[in-house]
Length: 143
Length: 139
Image (cartoon, rainbow over the protein chains, first blue to last red):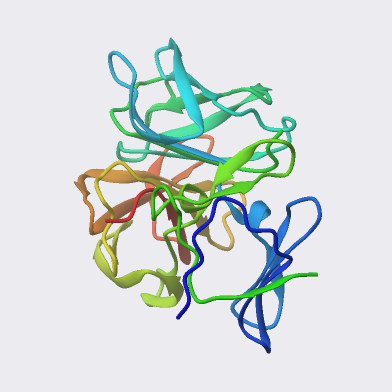
């Protein structure tokens, strides 16, 4: 096995052997990779662009994040994570999970923007409530 | 056109950290963006339809299912996303947004699907399928 160590390697194809292309890199830096079967998929489109696990009770505190610079504690049960590197538009997808039995977490109908998004956490009576565990994933296009 | 024939791509500065160009001008981290676990669980009949990095699932009780990972996470600070698939009952909204915070570790997670309608905000229910995917740091 050969090892190439370098900061910049200019290449178009990455292969396991001469017959098996694993990755194709376009002139825009986009990477097409071989899927599990015969189809290919886009690496950048398949990557989560941000995620966060945070404590939303009391003083909001992140446990771990990817591409999240901070979280605004708007009011009880309402939080607004801010991206480190913004998304290209508001047309991204967000998933939301909480750590309380049968609570529901929803996305604000308008406050989803390239730089941040706002979520509402509701208890099982339908009222705004804080949770000690809130988790969110973001997929879409980076700016 | 250049071709590189390789088995493994590894970060130079940090072995487990490779940056890739995003859709625009920003870079994003490959490892942080990858889904580390996913599982399509057939909750009615209780079988795993397909999965990645999922060793097993456990049916604890109504609307109370555990997923156990093959390769553990580095800590409890990872980030799951869930979705249910269920037929009928068009007046209900059904979600899998709650986890059992007391049964959440580097090796397992327990999810709590819920259903809502106009008279009942959230109640327990057993969906046909529970789909889970997780981002975060592997051990």
